[in-house]
Image (cartoon, rainbow, N blue to C red; front, side, top):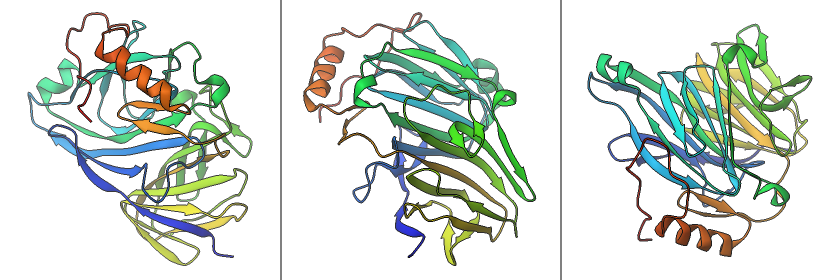
Length: 289
């Protein structure tokens, strides 16, 4: 049995002057475990005076996970949370019944010029938890478990891997590892989680004899451990977990198991019924389609 079920290729998307690589969702695969959205940000360089300004926008029925390899982003949300995230930390925002947030380059980094490199992911919530109260939690790098083997350095960003458990409070079985593998390193990913995928941000790896280049995601066959070999120094992320409990609808920033819930969220944002981010007056309008 082949260890690789499906190969996906990330596509470039322009977010208003800032380009990302988006690998999920795909026409060929909507979810891997609870992960329904995966964007690679950068690596990008900003000259002094430039940065990112993602104006306030809403989410429902999901959790967002921000993890950086380089740079800094300032998070603000409608709960009043204000938090800078730096490399190795985790920002975990549960939208639940509804939340609004912004993401911007903080003033010091903007004035000095800076790099930005990381992953922005969305995790669908189980149907029983879709409407939980919104919340925000920050976890510092030193509080996250590490996998450190010869040539392999991975962070357990969320969920579990073997005996390691991230402090991030997930709502369903989750696998999220991110880090680096050095050229020539060998490592086996076990089949503990039902659904698994390996995404290569940079470099090139080999899985079960097949080369996987930067920008590609290998969705793995359930129940089959896979041997990973780094062909060059590489940066990777591993996503997965239990299969979701049914279909998920995705429109703009809204995810839900119920199409009518997304229609309600559209109307709520259009009519200004979401809570505002304290101190911010800007917002991203509802798209026309």
